[in-house]
Structures are given as structure tokens and as C-alpha cells.
Image 1: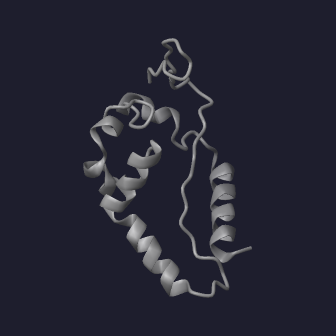
Image 2 (image 1 turned 45 degrees about the vertical axis):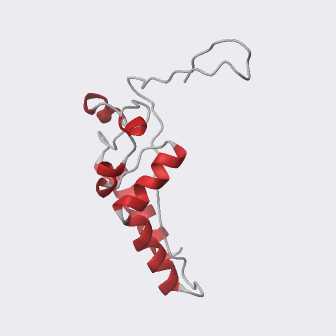
Length: 118
């Protein structure tokens, strides 16, 4: 990004992935237990999981999207931005790997509790 208009001078903002300690974000679309209109919520989730709609979100806010159906619809800018589309050799730095069986079990229990609304 290079926009010197507001700063009245040229500048660049960069981002690079560290060897370890990177932040992993998780996206969720969920229907809360006791929701008044769960069918409408399900329709919205299905709408957002459509590849074109999911890509629209990524193109708008400039973030990665885990929905593979969205990939063909990413804008050229998003597709070539390494902060959004991390090069394959660096993706291993953000995936949930190297965890013990106990850690994986704890994550599974947390996800189970979320799904049940506990």
C-alpha cells in the first residue's frame, strides 16, 4: 500500500509472516440455541457459504477466506496479495499442527460445547 495523500509524503505498510507465533483466526457461522428464526439463519449461512458471496466478503474487507468455493471469485488484488493469500510454503505457520493428543481433545471439547450452546 502506498498512499501519501493523507500523510503528505510517500510511505509503505508491509506485513510478513513470522517463523512461529502467528495469529490464527477462526470464522464461524452459527445458529444460537433458542434462536427465534433458525430457518432464516440457516438460509443466511447457506447464502454466505456460496462461493461468490464468500468471495465478496474477502474482496470487501481484504481477508483470507477458508471457503475453497470462494477462491475462483477473489479479485485480482486479493489473489496476488500475500497478506491475504499466503504462499503455500508459509501456510504451515498458521495451521493447527504439532499439538498433543490432550490439546486436540481439549479443542474438540471446546468446539463441542460451542455447538451445544454451553
